[in-house]
Length: 175
Image (cartoon, rainbow, N blue to C red; front, side, top):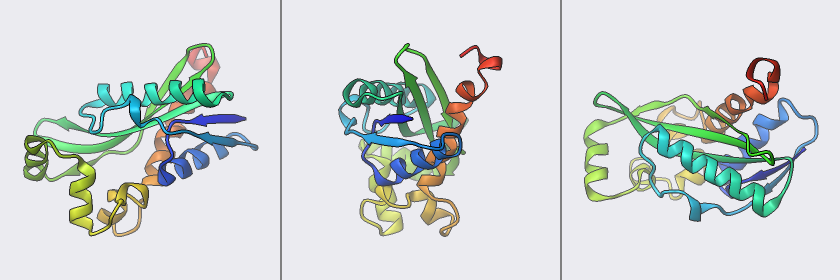
């Protein structure tokens, strides 16, 4: 299985590798830079899904392979609670896209409102809070917040596995 990957972020690439390795004995990943096709700070599940799908399709077009994968992290709200989450898109040459998401976790409302009013990205806030430069390329904010129990690679793995479900059960999903 050759998988075109719409990121060069090491944490995301590791999560994608782990997700596919659960179901496919031989996986070759072909990472590409896809930062040009997605918003810097997606808000809402729709924007995250669009960004992940754009990344997956670009990766498949540029790198080729059996499937293309894109993962988009972003922020969504339920009422006045802000959540960080990741959405994965898995695309194939037939134009079919399956989506999945990771566990979401809450973020401090006042800090997020300030972040958005100033036009900043979560990554800058996460670096400030954690004291870790490029925290998103490492364990991620989740790694800091959970005191090392959950990593960004773990969340990426979750959303990739859930995005693969229709392909794992084509009898149920018609894939």
